[in-house]
Image 1 (tube, rainbow, N blue to C red):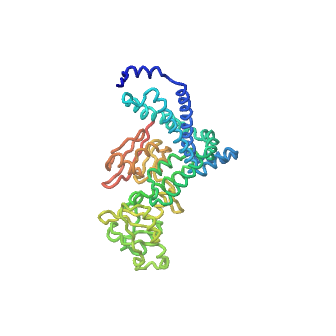
Image 2 (image 1 turned 90 degrees about the vertical axis):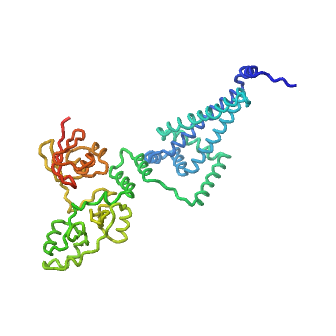
Image 3 (image 1 turned 180 degrees about the vertical axis):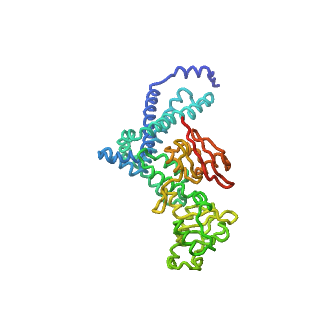
Length: 442
């Protein structure tokens, strides 16, 4: 019959055991492995978060180290495979050596099951995450160029040293095979693109260049109603007008294409191309001018402008009539409107660059409701951040007031935005026509 020793005696034996020489050796190796793990994780973060300016600085150094860094960056898959394989071997080593140490203090018996589980799963995992992942990656992200210069030689040695180099090549070839046979395509959302553009913006970047990039990203989700010229601001010709009045209207409007309506501006029946009238300019009694108008191109309010641009290209057209859910015309969109969403305002010799406003006194201005917010900033000499943070979808002063008030304000009603008092001078049921802005002294 075997007599088992009481648990208290077993605990006494464990306590007496203490740290053996092997355990000190294991602990020292674990510390070294954690250091290597931190270096690998930091390298991953540093190499793959280098800014374009950092890469350019490395190229311009023209030293042996900079050439080696460029060589590593030129083969990102091999670099990543080297880092990941090394890191995984190191982490496995930490886990194995930790198990050896735990065996001396908490043998794999029922009495120590819970303690071993907590130490192995929670304790060791926490140490690996903090010292081997989180802390080094945060440091490397803030000091990427410095870390890259520190780690370039160790990584170059690792990628050429067997068996690590063999495993690296195997992993890279395996990834090529998967990519070659994968049927799906990598997709990225516009929100992710916007975030990427925001993250890569540098202080010395051209503001115009950055706006073009933002315009391209937002291009695919912009609708026609967001960029259209409202019907009330569209210059259109009544089809019943005589030719003499048509010519006078054309000279005053200054456009090469003008919508033609019948009875009301809701009912657009065609587009008049001014070049089609050139053969009959000398005949002021030309009665058949309406026969040369071209068929209009109607689009819904929610038409995406990237699709509209393609249709303009295929149909060789420059103007579309935007209609509402009832079929009535609510505005027009031109090819120029679409392009301006990417490159900004396009002006020509016929555009009036002067901003229409009146200055009552040094702190009081009167604007038309359709004046753009950008023009408002120019007149007031402000950066406009307070308006930009609040404007929502509004692009004009009148739209801004409606956006903030939640309704079309009546005459003499006002809103206040920081040190600006915005008073409605004139409005009707459809829009704000005129606005007075008073700048309060701080």
